[in-house]
Image (cartoon, rainbow, N blue to C red; front, side, top):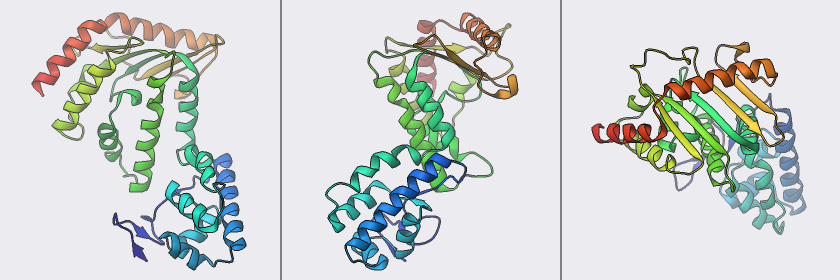
Length: 291
């Protein structure tokens, strides 16, 4: 077992470079297996043994076998090195696109796909900031508090997936995005005071976007339609929609018009009960000054 320049162990073990394969993700498993077979075919065609191949690109023999056997998702630099070594002319490196999404959990990929297709998103967050609003530091701190704890590999995969979802802000034309955040989510020092400061600064930046509205639900409100927990509604160009309300309908996404009507009703009332977007940004600025 060797160690690369960043201190990452090359070879067997949980800390080896790459990502775990989710055995419940059938399509992902198939992609990883197909890429592994291609790598093995190119290596054998070049007349190289696994140990020799791995040593040449800076990885252990055990990892090479795991990648070729579809039991480990290789990092992009593995494919780049392999491509040059066996003279694949970019064919192996091009597979980075096939693996880019597979390394993320299936549920997150499905959510990201829906968000990418949505023309309107309305969400209410009661315990922590919505994933689309989180900084990388905040997301890492949030996932790091999970018990039982995630492995470092799993934690980094979740953080990367969450950050990848934020490409929604780069779409043109952008979707209409409306977030209502409980006041406590803006006060809780997840990760420490400086993580919260940078998170509040990020909210102020995002809140200036023309297609984004951020509202704060003050803790002191006497009436509150969101006591059941978090909820979200996504609407699409063809007029269809998907909603989810924590604690209702088995906490599963719903598209039935009767169920959607309930979630949309609650989201609308929550927006009406919260501070206006302008008042909310002023409130966030105040919190930033106090942090």
